[in-house]
Amino acid sequence: MEIPSIKWEKQRTAALDKDFKHAVADFLRRRWPTGTAKETARTYDLSLDKAREAVAGRASLTTVEQIMKRGGWSVTLVIMTEVLGQQLAQHLTEIRVSHDRNAQRLAALSHDLWLVSDSRGDDPPGVDVRQAERRITDRRREGESQAG
Image 1 (cartoon, rainbow, N blue to C red):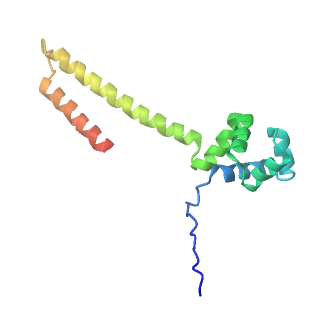
Image 2: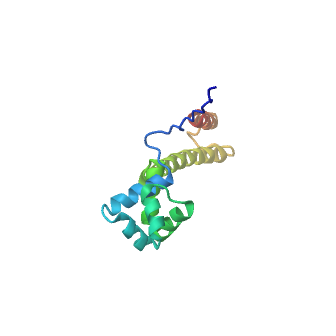
Image 3: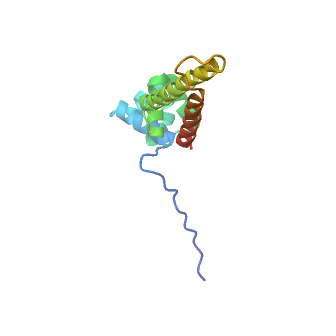
């Protein structure tokens, strides 16, 4: 009689993807190439066993939190950069570029709205109300096509 075997397939992840435990372990090994566990225990106020687990990539969530809290932003940002695969500066630059684009669109729309509202009463010479309204509609369509 044959005993059926169960084959478990490991979950596959992207090559750049790291979980917190492995990111912490890599950070600790880079920071202290020798005596890693002892220095980790001393610096982050961990027991030697917990420090060894962290260096091996088997840290508990509590240990990871303790390392990040005691290490502060400098440690947390390095670990998060490895986990996310993106530098914080790069992310902030992308946000700033997006905000700048939106600010330019808003400025153009507010200028066009001012022209339309100002020209509805007494049309100043050289202002075509229909042309300004068409520009507003075109910009809206342009913004919707870029967003979608």
